[in-house]
Amino acid sequence: MSKIKIITDSSCDLNKDIIEKYNIGVVGLNVSFGEETYIDGQIDNNVFYERMASSKELPKTSCPSPEKFSKAYECEEDEILVITITSKLSATYSTAVLAKNMYLEENNNKAIEVMDSETGSVGHGLLVVKAAQLANEGKTLNEIVEEIEKLKKDIVFYGSLETLENAIKGGRINPLAGKLINALNFKVIIQVVDGIVKPVDKARGDNNSIKKVVDSVSKRVCEKEKRVLAIGHSNCLDKALKVKDMMIKENLFEDITISEVGSVMGTYTSKGAILISIL
Image 1: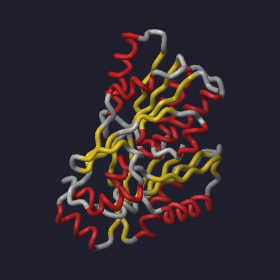
Image 2 (image 1 turned 90 degrees about the vertical axis):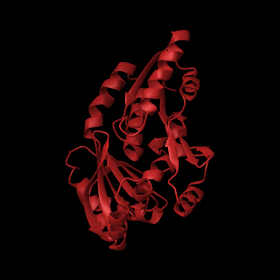
Image 3 (image 1 turned 90 degrees about the horizontal axis):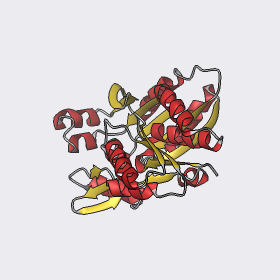
Image 4 (image 1 turned 45 degrees about the vertical axis):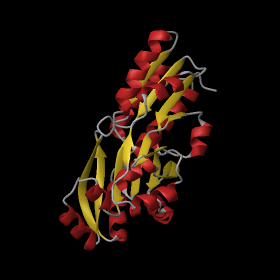
């Protein structure tokens, strides 16, 4: 077992088997429907997406309390690396740093590093897994931090949004314009760069949007060594499997994972979204 504990937050959308394989500590973010608050992962994804679709208001998400991170730091390992969702989308990074400072005031026998992944969901998850693998290989905490800092710049992350319904509910797009785009069956293509989600293109229909996302990612797979592919889906496994088939036709990957987009990231992507990231 590694002597370095890797901790992250639930927005990384990692599958349970991967979390267990690498003994990754996961601190849950919060999702609220009105007065009801759930920890990300407590509510079944099918139930979550159904409830979100029928709700007039968008669920609220919030970062974990410093106490939750402090509790995670109470592990048997003396060295800890925390990798959080991009600080440009959540206060989770700041909270983890605050918790670190609070914890070390009373427990100065540990070394804790907190890193901003500068990405989210499956891209964030790829960095967490890489850090865990490096720890298992016997790399030091400083070596892992240095390597992850470099790899952050190599992350490729694109996605296709099935609907702009959540963007409309959240007040991030004009309701009339959003409904018109939905009515015309346009899907928005997004890219995550430097921690920011940017709309970069659009396509009419699922097939065209998926093809554009696959093409955008494939153009970036130009390294000689094999890369790792992560596909996230918002309650649409059939689309994810289709994307996998399309990606492996023209590319070779060292590993491929397919995971569900949980309630925190799903609040912003809506049901039917596809996210693709490579490292």
